[in-house]
Each structure stands twice: as C-alpha cells, then as structure tokens.
Image (cartoon, rainbow, N blue to C red):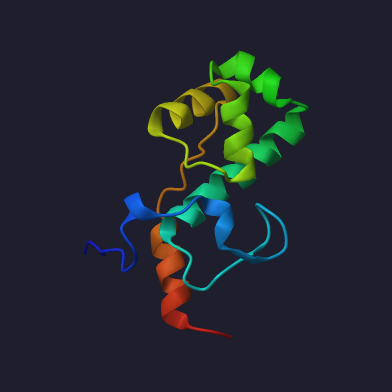
Length: 117
C-alpha cells in the first residue's frame, strides 16, 4: 500500500540544517516535526561526508571527479541546500555509491508513529 507523507509541502521546506535542535550538522538532533526533506538532506550529507573522509577526498577533489561545483558540494555538506537529482546522479556516479535514501520516509514515519521513548 502506498503511504502518503503526512507533513508539509516539500517545496516550502526551509534549508535542512535549520531543523536541528541540538548538536551540529549533519549529526545533531532534529526537531520532532522536521520535514521529511530535511531528513533526506541530512542522510545525503552524512553519507557524502563519510565517503569523502574514507577516501581522503576534498570538496575540490570531489568536484573534479563529479563535475559538481565545489561550492555546491560544500553547501550540500553543510545542509544549506537540498541537492537536485542531477547533482545526486553526478555524485553517485563519481563515487559509485547510492546517496539517495530510498525508503527513508517509511522509517521516519514509523519512528513518528511510535512516538517518544
């Protein structure tokens, strides 16, 4: 059965990092009502940061590999933007990894349905 996301319209989401209530981006704690887009943005930033660290890649190095401008890489890593599909595709292809968090909306909704605790 198809589940509908029970949240705000994604087009009206603020940038992902504004939904942190404690800690630092991308590993801090989100507000309980953070929109699903913010969770997706955080997942992409966490994964990208981990892979770059593991491979010793800088933002400029990844820019050279992927064709994504280093400023864009930095903005994605800082949670200042939601990466578009073309950017995700270029980064995934350059790194030979999956960045898009398939099914994350279901996991987030299950956590919300379970409530605190």
